[in-house]
Image 1 (tube, rainbow, N blue to C red):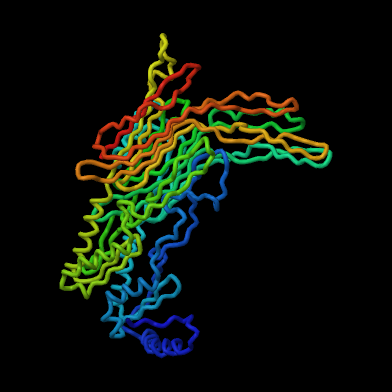
Image 2: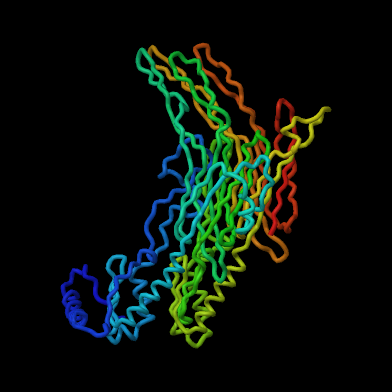
Length: 585
């Protein structure tokens, strides 16, 4: 390939060679031409190369405390991954493969300058080179718009977990969201949508005890309401569709925050916000303009009533390269590691943080290098295998060669896509049993539903959904003692009541294998009581908990009965709960 040397090269020889090579061309450009036979264009490559961004995954497990951006370790969709980018040199190399005759004959010159490409030479050759860049840009830098919204679900018929464009239009008609956020970007990039309000409050007390005196000071923190999501939407081959991966967190505040007097002389009152919080990660295959829907609702004891939607739309239809011997093929839906990692469910009694479990062998994810190896193996049977160039950056595959070989690689990727990128719907129900004593049940329990969760997922990808009611409680009281002074220090913990589930579906010859973990708990907010004559309170909570697992084959529409969940107290009356999970393909 004839390329001009980089002017940043410390060796002065390339600079001299560049000058001697370009001087005749520049003289030709300056000479009168009628009509002009040469042209020069500076082609921006930023749309192809991409840009570095700072995208942070949503909070996880609780919104009662603000976690610094650098400490958020639960990133299930690759929000913090380096963006997949194409180097200017790669683009220049691909152009050389298309226009090698013109470059070798000295009729076309290519030079990268930063993230730009200088193209100059014969006018027709320059026009063709610019055309190839423009065509590739329409594929690689396809613009998308993502809308993340929350809807009140108390009186709403739960929508399907996957809506097409017409279905989404019917769903939003004459309905106003609680809030919504819209962002735009490139297909395949991690896009953040954050509509969160953080409120500062007095969460705990800190005490300084000296030799003869002590002093307490308020320790503040932040709690969040609203919603935060990171969405990655990958274009698919031969279809105006997207494979969408999302991680989210959302919360609403229930009533005004309560205050708690600790009884300590001169100490500030503690504040106890109550949040209807939900967290999760899901995926779906959507039509252009369609949306995935997550329903999280049920009895007020276990959280709020929300439907969360993520709509993905592009005003630019999918296109293909005009030449049959060149293809730029979307493959990010296959190669992405989004939702290939699992997060362990919490352990409320052990106070252990969740841990991310890595899974290098997840079904549905094919590393980019493996795709390239598969393409080369396929091409071994084609006469033009030696003339075919296959490269993959993780989101797109570039194939240059005989038309038959290019078509074979495209058919390979399309077949994998249709096999691996398939929707599954997961529904979980926790039903309340009628009370054992006579009389009508309270109005809020007549629906007999404790939890109702519906969430979409793709085969082989992790799915998680948490719905809870959470608040702070005083779990312990510590004593600080000096020589002639002492003080009590309250320890603050998080009390959560609700349901946590995570799972993964993989295909079987006659059904689906479901690996599911489920945690359901119920805990009433305790009444504070004094525990020390000199001040200090405790909030002793009772926690009813059921933790279950399913690991086996199921058929579409089959209800998996998990047995009894925790006993729930509603308005002073006890109810049993039963747990079932259903998947549909």
